[in-house]
Image 1 (cartoon, rainbow, N blue to C red):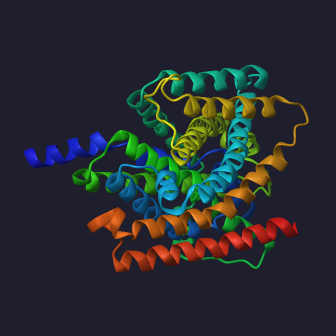
Image 2 (image 1 turned 90 degrees about the vertical axis):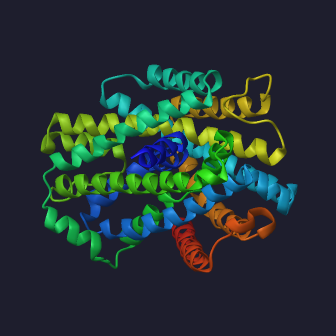
Image 3 (image 1 turned 120 degrees about the vertical axis):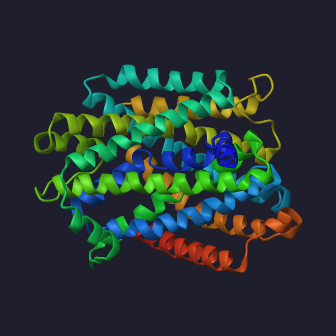
Length: 409
């Protein structure tokens, strides 16, 4: 009994980085992708969640293990082993990509606030100031607790899915039996589901947050569980988003282009409460994404350049870290508030850059995790390498297809 309590205590002490990183991957862009998938193709795309979850767990486990063993962030390791020049260009591309992602998240926040009857010209500045104060004035422990609590709100999508009253036998059949369609939009959404689940910023944020938290090698089993639980929860949430839109919107032939439209479209079919839950969950996901993506950018840029970084630092102790975080928040908020700003173009550009950068990030991560000088006895096993390289190759192929489709369209 005492041993069991000790294990539970250990898990709770390291709980956070894995669950937060995976869950906040379901930001405004991710929720939009799942909502559109369910509304346009019903349950047909549910099967993609199983291989996506396996791939996510494999990649995140490897990244978390490097963070625990080395006590360093991923960009720090890339700089030390592959040089400043490669790291600089990689970070520059990620900065632009993450600026676009932050804009998408604040745009999602603005849209959800307008659904709730609040002006975006008030709520976007209020949200931006709030998240800036949280990170620049809070400690790592405090910020982590706030983020963990906010992750609970994601279960609003689970409630919304149950309230939609789907035919569960059809749902689980679609989950395990692929229903592949020879349709351009179907292929694009398949790629988008995988692409929105495994992103470059996730890898940098996860490893940096583990390093800042100071998790030791002997505690790694608990960290691995944190990662697996986080990856599983995020795709359970994705599952219910697809189910909700597939059950309510698809039969009615309602086509949507973003998650806020899904929240509004649910109202006449599933009732005001279901629509409200969907909108509140979108607001939560958007503001969390707006916290984490700039934070990830500040982490890996400072690590790459050898500057001080960390939420526990002050402006005086880590000026570059704090100013990078501040600049992304301010720029993104201003862009969202400018009438007629090319937000869609910026979002597409960020997706394109993320797609171009992701294969490089994953290849570097795999090479680093197999380097015995860095990882010692914690290098990947042969079986893990086979699964990991297969995952990376699949992601590279899908990324090439995604970029090709984006350029052609």
